[in-house]
Image (cartoon, rainbow, N blue to C red):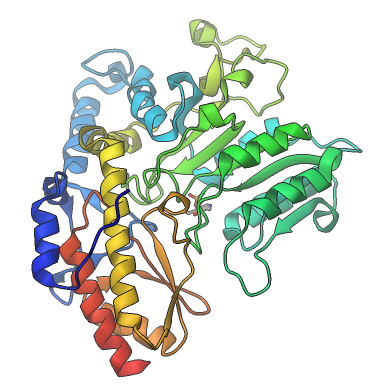
Length: 428
Ligand SMILES: *Cc1c(COP(=O)(O)O)cnc(C)c1O
């Protein structure tokens, strides 16, 4: 990217918006009100906004259900029986995966458990798991309980890699060194693709390569990566991954997750798994006989028939990603977050009351910046909310703000910066 000379002015922010080829997508979303006014919503990393198309899509399926009832499974414009297929091309594009390597199903934490049933197969010699220190709590509980399920001691099994003294983010070299050091005791690397607290993107390709080199598997939790950064899971050789769709993918609270399983595992019936009828060979599904035969690819990990209303909501948002184009979105995202970073630098001036702990390199971050607040802390954050900014506060002193390229504007970022400046004057 060529260097940009950003400016701290409303006129300049408006010019950027004017020139933004994706500006029309903002109108596709509902914005919540704070104190009676539309919020500056920087919380898509927690819950994405509702697309206006969501209700239309769900209404359509409600109508199908009303009109056709059970016949909706096999008849009509888009029979429910095959509804999962519709999201595969765009999910594949978002993940950098083949269509048969991805499928939307279940919830994130459930999916990672199901995938670990297949890909965490500890033996007496090879049993350890490498993960990042300070992982999202659900991930910590998943690993702990998987390890105990195999009768092992989490203390002796899970290796957490943290930042070096005085640093906030992990160094790839440290992750790779730990993988090499653990060597043939390492069964699995299972970590975030994009760290929820710091906003750091890990080098999934290098990590996977290293893991494979010592004979281990590599899986990623893509909760904060899906719909935020572009990925190449297939080419990187990642064994498995899962994500949720209610953060950057705007599918609605608690809605359907998705999984990815590399092609090399697509046709391996010897892989143990917890099966259900929806993962069984489609041609024989309704024979209702004993003997599980997994479908080819990610579909073979499905258990239950598809949540159609959830899928309708997911599609409303995936269509927007498809129309806007994920590479266009990424381009805008780098500009938007770059602008935010610039303005924070301007506000900080000499005082350095704010410290951005998210990496500076755009390739090592998505849209989120995590701000360590050295003075004023929660008071600064509460003041932001008073002025209509929805971000989030993470104990003990981090404000996370995530301007998303689908529905946030450069003017949002500029207004945020002005309010942040005032709040710091008041409380820091
Ligand atoms: C949001 C998030 C989750 C949430 O898991 P659910 O099963 O969807 O409740 C899990 N892991 C990470 C890293 C997350 O960011």
